[in-house]
Image (cartoon, rainbow, N blue to C red):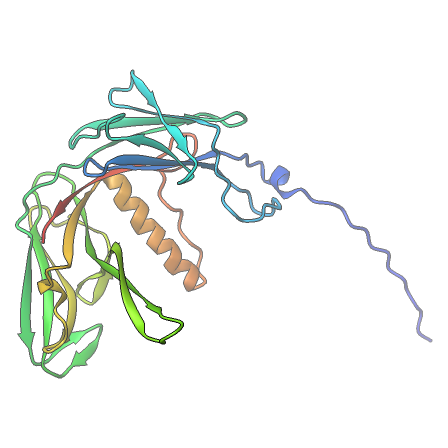
Amino acid sequence: MLASVAFTGCVDEVVIPNQSGESQKLVLYARLCPQLDSTYILLSNTQLLYSGHSGSMRILDDGVVELSADGSHWVRAHFDTTRNRYLLTREEFPVEEGRTYHIRASHEGFAEVSASCTVPVTRDVGFRFDTVMVESDVHYDELCNWPHKDVYVEWRDVPGEQNAYALFQYRPHTYYTEDPETGEWTSVSCGRQYYNPWLTEDNRAYQYVSDEGRDGQLMRYLLYYALYEDYEDDEDEDVSYCLFFLDRNCYLYETTLTDDYEMVSMQLEPPHTFSNIGNGFGLFGAFSMREVK
C-alpha cells in the first residue's frame, strides 16, 4: 500500500541587491577632441542585476559635471535637452593637444566621481595607401585564386612613446525615396556618414591598433581586397579618411568593449570593460584626428 505524502512549501522574498552588498555608482562618459566644436558628457548610474529596472539607460540631467585644465579652476557643463547630454562648446572650454584635463561629477545619493586624461598630439606619420595587384593570395585562411587588388594602409609609428590608432572613413550619405505617383526612385543626399573599417594583419582584423611591441615600426594593414573592376574607394574624391590618435584610455575601452561582445556571442564569460573613472564607472578619454586623404 502506497502512502500519500503532502509537501508544504514556503516562498521567501529574496532581495538580491541587498545580499550582494553592491551599491549603485555614477557612470560618467566623455571624450575630448581638439578638432571638434563641442564636448559632450553623459552622466548615468549603474543598474544592478535583478533590480527590476526596465533596462533603458537612466540619464541624470540634474547632476553637476565640471571640467578643468589645471585641476584647480573648474568649468561647469550645462545639460543639452536636445542631445540628452551635458555640453561645453569649444569657446566655453577649449581643448588642446598635449594637455592634461580633469573631470568630476556629482549627484545627490551618489559618491562623487573623477578622472583625468591627456590629449594625444597628431603627427605626420607618412600615412599612405598602397594598392597591390595580385593573382592569388590568402585572406582569412581562404585562397583568393583570381585576379584582384589588395589595398593596404600604412604609416610609421612615432618612436619613444605609447601610441594607439584608428582609421575612420567619411563618405556622402545617400538614401532613396519613391514618388508615390510615378513610382520613380530618387536619391537624396543628406550630409556625410562615417564608419570605422576593419584593418587586417596576419588574417586578424582590428578596428583599433597600438604600437605595443612595435615602437617606431611600420604599421601596415590590409584595408580591403576586391576584383580589378570593382569601385575603388581609396581613389574616390568624395571619400575621405581620418587617422585617429587615441589615448590609452580610449584604446583600452574600445578593445575591451569589442572583446566583451565577442565573448558574449560565444557564450563565454565576458571580460570587464575598461574604466578609468575613480569611484565609479565609465570613460574619460581623448583623441585627436588628422585627415589623411
